[in-house]
Length: 245
Image 1: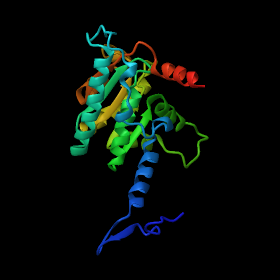
Image 2 (image 1 turned 90 degrees about the vertical axis):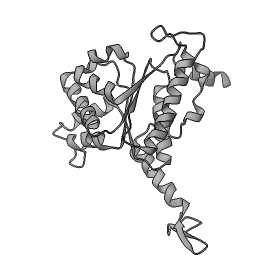
Image 3 (image 1 turned 60 degrees about the vertical axis):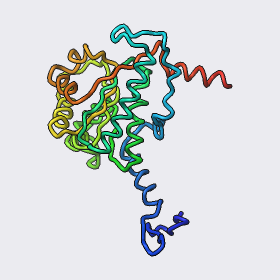
Image 4 (image 1 turned 120 degrees about the vertical axis):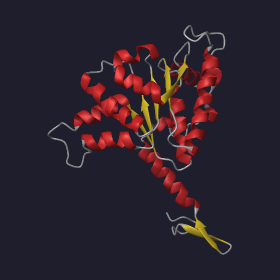
C-alpha cells in the first residue's frame, strides 16, 4: 500500500523545501530491526519498561555486598549511559552483564539495541551457541550455495558497529569454539568496536570456559555488571500470566 502522505515518492514539501517523508525513516528502522536479528519477544523492549519489582531490596549478593535491587539499578543506569556514549562515539567501551538465568540480562541488551536502532544505528544480536552452530553448518558438503560462508558469518560479527553476544553460557567450549569467539573479540578490540555480552558465567570463572586470551580482551573492552534475583524472572512472569486466566 502506497504511503498516504507522499505516495511512495519518499519526499514531501514543507513550505518550499523538500524533506524526507516519515515513511522513509520508518522503512529504514524496519530494515534495521530485521537485520539486527533480535528475538521477536524483545523487539520494542526498552529501558523504560524494565521492571525493578523482581529485584528484592532485602536479598544481598554475597559477592558484592549489594542488594538485588541496587545491582539492577546500577546495571540499568549503565545501559542508559552506554546508549548516550555510543551515539556520541561508536568506538566506546562495551558492557558485560553477568548473572543467573532469568535475571534480566537479555532485556537490558535488547533495550540498548532498540534504542540505537531508533537512531538509525546498525546492531547485530547473536545467541552464541546459535552462531557457532551456523558456522559449523558451513562445513556441510550438502549445504546450499546461497548459504553464508564461515568467513561471511565471522566477518559480519567482527565488523558490525555494535555486536550483542547473548548467552555466553557455561557450555563445554572446545578449542574450536574458543578460537572462533576469540577471533571475533580480538578483531573488535583492535578496531575499537564495542560488544555487549550477556553471560551466566561468574566473572571469576570466565577464564575456565573461554581461556585467558579471550577473557583478558573481554575485560579490557567491557565494563562488567552483575544482576542477581532470588527466582527466575521468566518463571515469575509465567505465574503472573496464569493468575490472570
